[in-house]
Amino acid sequence: MISRLLVANRGEIACRVFRTCRDLGVSTVAVYSDADAGALHVREADAAVRLPGAAPSETYLRGDLIVKAALAAGADAVHPGYGFLSENADFARTVIDAGLFWIGPPPAAIEAMASKTRAKELLGIEPLDPARVAESDLPVLVKAAAGGGGRGMRIVRELAELAGELESASAEAASAFGDGEVFVEPYVEDGRHVEVQLLCDAHGTVWALGTRDCSLQRRHQKVIEEAPAPGLPAALEASLLDTAVRAAKAVGYVGAGTVEFLVADGRAHFLEMNTRLQVEHPVTEEVYGVDLVALQLAVAEGAKLPPETPAPRGHAIEARLYAEDPARGWAPQTGALRLFDVPGGVRLDTGYASGDAIGVHYDPMIAKLTVHAPTRDGAVRKLARALERTRIHGPVTNRDLLVASLRHPEYATADRLDTGFYDRNLPALTTAPEGAEPAAVAAALAAASARRGRFGGGWRNLRSQDETRTYGGTGGDHEVRYRPTRDGGYEVTAPEGVRVVAATPDRVSLETAGVVRHFDVTAYEDGTVHVGGHRLTARPRFTDPREQTAPGSLLAPMPGTVVRVADGLAVGDAVTAGQPLLWLEAMKMEHRVAAPASGTLTALHAAPGRQVEVGALLAVVQTEERPEAQS
View 1 (cartoon, helix red, strand yellow):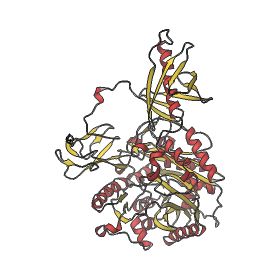
View 2: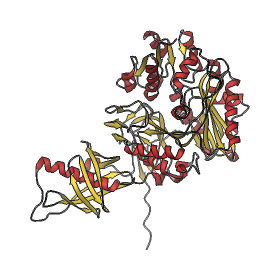
View 3: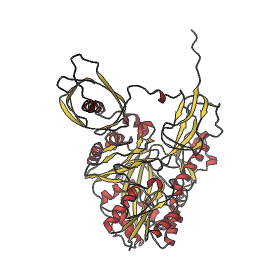
View 4: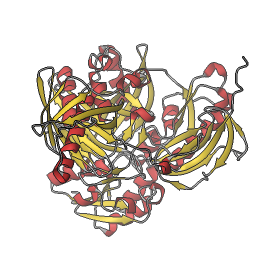
């Protein structure tokens, strides 16, 4: 029997495993990097062991340190979570050789399936030879052989870009997984990403726990997932389940695993088998009424699964809440999470709590919100409303995008679910959410009320010029003009049609079109104002001259590390618009910084290994001057 378990991972998956352990009476051990010293998973564990350093390669990818940590803490079992070492056969063997329970499949099964290249070979699928890729093969996908989550993955549409993308993907894969092997395969445009959840015991029983649709993705990482996958023809669904079961039996699989497919034109293309728990496992748990982590532990202890797979019920949908700005190329965000409050009736899996800091070292996912309902329509409505009511004060997040995605006709009706959803719809999904303008009015009046409370002042016989305040938010800036009234209230002159019912520094009531709405307002010293579900930024009335930058300046869009500069790039070089100049790594993803226009590189302040803060000057491109037209 397992009595003390160490989770060889961090964040929400560590917290999620600990939750089941508490229910089972199993004590828990966390490991943590220096960057995670105060993290929620460390606070929730019964004991914790430090892994010196911050980079994953120094900490969470060091299997030897993790096994030493388990032995030092008196653990008798290791759960790898997902990612990092969960699909590393050598790590599994090291755990087993140390006399510990390994909560995962046998090392031989990991070796057979964890490498995507070897898995394809096992199923008779040959990847493309990078040296022989021709124009007729395009587009192709460069993909990391190990790991997942979109890291080490690149779409190549121009043959000239293949060599560079192979190098870039390999570097990213090595950093994220400790394995730089990549391969090339045909890229299927806008297919559906469908997967099958498996659970197998050591006695030959295999459960195929239905399907999941994970098609809504950005940067090849999943954003919204659901179970069961809607609208699959019965024959195709049966084929997916059968293929997944055959794959598991072929390698003597034991434990939880997932077989992934890309479905296009009525056909299923095998992608990979993930020999671990998946991030989106909660939707399967909600539909089948099971605890997959508890079952993982039971199987590791030698228990037999019941011969019959549990029956499904209803529909479940999960949304991943990321600290990122979808309108700015999904740029990850950092900073203090001042408030994080999710309404009741929602399953919350998270590695953060109010007051925690979101740093630059790891994935930007804050939490997963999951709901279950008797029907898909009910689940869509329930999750969208829950996200609207979630209070998140801190960095920019994708919350508004999630709400808009769930309510978009393509998703809400399931008429067009495929991986091209955000390519088609992102501009429309990142416009100002409904209510942004009155939220800006509420922010302005709350600020005026706070100022009046501190300094006094109010209506004058000689009418002065209107007060003006501007707030930036999703969809652009909102200007508000108002003046104090004789009765101690306020009159809004722009936007039109707004009547002020009441205004205090933390709550404002406004009437528009005969309907009164109440807005809770929280303002922070950095100019960020949260009004209900809206995140606004107070714009300064006058520009600080110190903030002006030279034309053509390339500023770091996020804090991170310069991992690569374009080969041979030097000051004085001519560059063309869109030409990649350097690459930043932030939150385990690479971000390409390109020339904004054609011109001459007049400054280059970036060098590999340099740590930069957001807004740091990386380079300057002096644009070409166009001659004036002759009259």
